[in-house]
Length: 139
Image (cartoon, rainbow, N blue to C red; front, side, top):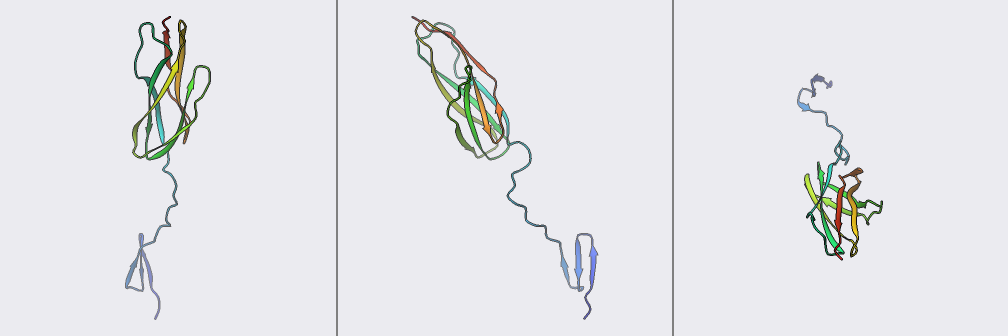
């Protein structure tokens, strides 16, 4: 019995009986192409106009925008270059994900003139806008 092969585009006719389609090799567990983190922003939870009782606890709301499910490592950076311990969170869905930070600052009778920034360190490094913190502590 002689074998018979004939190519029809992506299909192969073998022995005139069986249609065989080439099988692609399974793809590895590669992450999708492109950045996972596309945006980082920060805003204070409240604004201060007059003198404050100090030390004042400030609450900041950060937003990390992702394109897919991803584990993100982030920290906070202040105007003196200090960083807080890193946090690691897994965001299950793409979109805007929120993180919070509290910062206690100020001494009686002193002026506070600082800023804070959200810094994503992994999977890509990205920095948010800086949020200024300015107020006077009451005596």
